[in-house]
Amino acid sequence: DAGVIQSPRHEVTEMGQEVTLRCKPISGHDYLFWYRQTMMRGLELLIYFNNNVPIDDSGMPEDRFSAKMPNASFSTLKIQPSEPRDSAVYFCASSFYVISGANVLTFGAGSRLTVL
Amino acid sequence: SQQGEEDPQALSIQEGENATMNCSYKTSINNLQWYRQNSGRGLVHLILIRSNEREKHSGRLRVTLDTSKKSSSLLITASRAADTASYFCATAANQAGTALIFGKGTTLSVSS
Image (cartoon, rainbow over all chains, first blue to last red; front, top):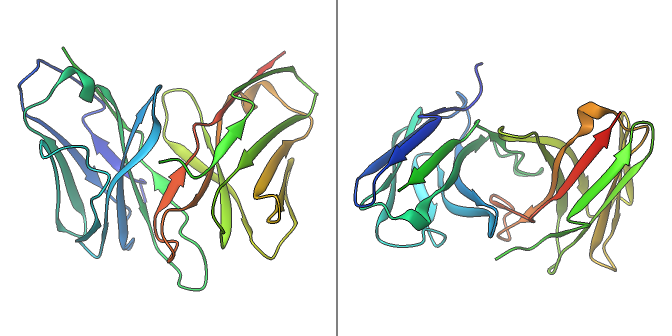
């Protein structure tokens, strides 16, 4: 497996534009997570899905942020309209949860977003 | 909000020395994980320790867990330049343990 695949790797856009980040999780994984990483706030959990269903979106900062998972192999995180304070690295991660175990996450390489 | 907080924020050592990073957390846990992040990359899982374990080893890594103090430590022995990275502890964000929250990490720099 190629691991968790994110695109684009880098995105530079202007304030007010729509941004769409994409993620392909590892095949067979039943959980998918979106995190945002900044120097100031570290890694923040934005939203996560189980079997394509959003479970907890309490970390999504504002209504400008939305995430979808239309099928088991694809998820998007959309920011509309984007603002300079959204500049960060956005990570997607996936996992296969073992009930008696723990959720070990596999991360993608991240999408670095710069909003001018 | 962060559950785990790593200490120190930054650590610089020479190759061959040992590096110790600490993590403190606030609520009870079933397990604690450590991840590494190389510059410009995603996080990579290193090791998991369960609440009923006190110590665990994996190669040059040694993790301890003290649930009474709500703290964990990661020891890297005989460090190498390739160990230069940020290290994060992660604990469950919910009771089921399905989502993880991470501390802000310790940035380790190993010079040759």
